[in-house]
Length: 343
Ligand code: CP3
Image (cartoon, rainbow, N blue to C red; front, side, top):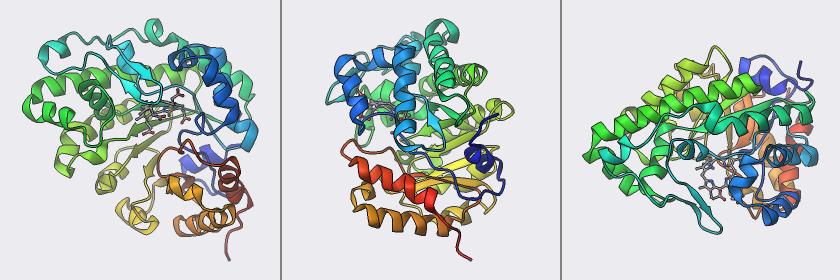
């Protein structure tokens, strides 16, 4: 039994005294205790060493007491396990030296044995669960197949992922073969994570909003739906699509336990589009954490009032930025804990 079950209750749609809170990308970046480890160990060493990954996962919980922890890892461990070389270049981000550009490239991609290639993630989960001591739930995650394809084909981050889109639009058969391989790997991976102990999973479709609504259905959503279908009986699934407000109606009928929304969609619109019944998660503008702490608190209280305290998980609309003052991140979490429902 998990002592603080606010997050799990919100995922089930149960009534809570206040909504739970966590922050996307809370493990890392802005924390000095994380930067210390970052100076000593490169990125994938941190991901692949269960002692380090579990330590980084619990760092924000110790400092701020969020209502859920998210395992320190990265969405790009999946392409790595599928035989695609991935580097994390300091001050640059992901770099894939041999991007996939044709059917031949797709043919070389494998659907790996999860325990063999990603067993270190399961070890990190077990070690994290011990450190968390059932205080708060642990979230596991994966990128959506489309978002993973973006990196595999583009080879690096991008403002518009033009090469990834060109690949889909000019070689759709190769693109769908790749998306299905990523989907199959992701399903096996998330099932293994649940078996290792995570209490919920989140699918990050960070670049879903790059696609038109029609292309989104073809190249992204149908694969996320497969993941939800395969996982929903085993653990609650949160689907987060950045810029994907146009798909909220369909997402709300998918079997996902909750939907993530970004700050470009108002609470009222998100509730309306998602049919008013499903749990929503979000959607504080991450740059708003640069406002003074007092303003942050006022805005968080207003945000809870507009989403409503039930069927709601307080979060940012995307990952926390590296240069957020510690005090401001603290004000965001405290505001939720201090929240009193209006009569
Ligand atoms: O939420 C958490 O705190 C758990 C850890 C986590 C990381 N990456 C650690 C990380 C999570 C959930 C991710 C997901 C991820 N990774 C996404 C989806 C979420 C999103 O923000 O859209 C994406 C698109 C990636 C790919 C990725 N990894 C990029 C673009 C970068 C470089 C830019 C950046 O974020 O700093 C990374 C590196 C990365 N992943 C870092 C961390 C803490 C920073 C680099 C480092 O620590 O050396």
